[in-house]
Image 1 (cartoon, each protein chain N blue to C red):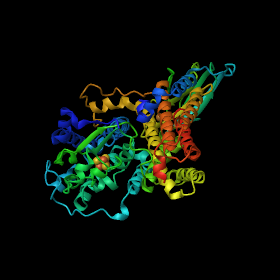
Image 2: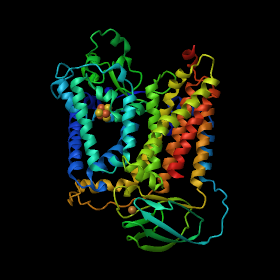
Image 3: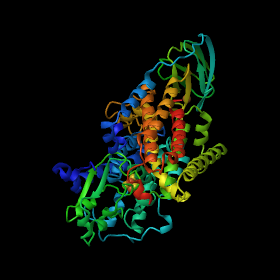
Image 4: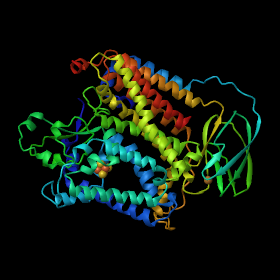
Length: 441
Length: 168
Ligand code: SF4
Ligand SMILES: [Cu+2]
């Protein structure tokens, strides 16, 4: 079905296949990562004057949701610096393919597999969000902790265990990459079936076997399989948005949980950061205080209780309206994919609402990254208060409405009957109305 | 973009389905048709807003279109400002001081107002809401949402072609 294979064109093929372009970009992101940590630790304590805050929470976090995921699925992971140092150790070299290197290469424990830990990590970020979002030091410490953890785990466990099972960003990008327009797939299944060595599987840092790839959730677009396949049988396709969603997709409870945590997070972030409720902001900020405990309690009740409860209620309805064979558990997992377009569009709308207003902070911190009074590109001190316009309001409305339409359509496609789809469409509707009210109400 | 978003099957349908155009027209109508609004007589309002780290009290203000708003901004702790999105209006109050200014609320809709003086860590999130007249944008958005659900509901007439294979 209408795919464009990028390996068919000489230029894109060369760019993807050669290790150099990717290495250069990753060298830059790694340098940027280290610089961000330094700026966070030694720069100004005023968040809006510190490169670390503005770059991580405005520039990068927005780019991830507005650019990397919607136009490249998991493309961020292909240039992410976090697993780099560990991978060099595992491979014993910068350019060598996966092979014998340092590290114990243990398998990740079965009990800890799935998206549960990633979802937990995302919840933690949300609980401490008001602090990380405003304190450059905390941001720097978290970044350092993440890269150190990724490094240590890569010495103990095989391949990218950190990415697969722990990284909250990986959970986020993986979930929404299923709606993204890029995929790695094999060209001819027969060729793979006759190739017993499975070079691609050995080389894949993510532990994937391309022939078995059904969704793009766990593929980090690192292009290693493309580079090692002796038969040139790997395609890098541009595809229509939402290609991984449909009746052939099976989600597991972990993915459903991740999807619900993402919905809860975008709701809570909208309430805290965009709402007119000042006491809530202070409560979210004063970690450890009684108001914070209450905030944390409410946050957890919403993300672990209210939303999953509403979702389960919708599922219960769908089971009642379905055929006799449908079980609750199966239904629960089956409709998990509806949360993908719903959440993705909500996060994009949230980003439009939040980041566009704050965008004027970006150039000044390039000009004066530490807040020490430098003026590298002559843009220091040009940040304005920023304001939202009715244009951005309409863009947010369109994004949310498209998300609702998309989610409802996916619901329809995987339902046995129109009737069965109704409770889930209602769930999507309630979520969308809440977002609309928070963003433009 | 909206087309590709929903997949290739939709593109094929558009070629021979009229419903898509009906949908588009309905959406345009929802966005642009003037809605009747009861016009309350404009009055003079004197409001007092207290600014403290990091909130405005009251945080939500509702007025009618055409009202003349006289605002007292009182700062309870450090220097705070108040600037209204979409309106060219700003007030800055020193600690313990009151600053007063007036403006006419001639644009309808919901506008955020923000603290305009860096006052601490959460300053970028110090936000309030000014609603002038009814929030028509939100009403239109809800109607668009309903339209989207209805469109999705009716756009797939038959159950999806391979559904049977999967279920049996
Ligand atoms: S999963 Fe996380 S650490 Fe791994 S590549 Fe993606 S963003 Fe980077
Ligand atoms: Cu302030």
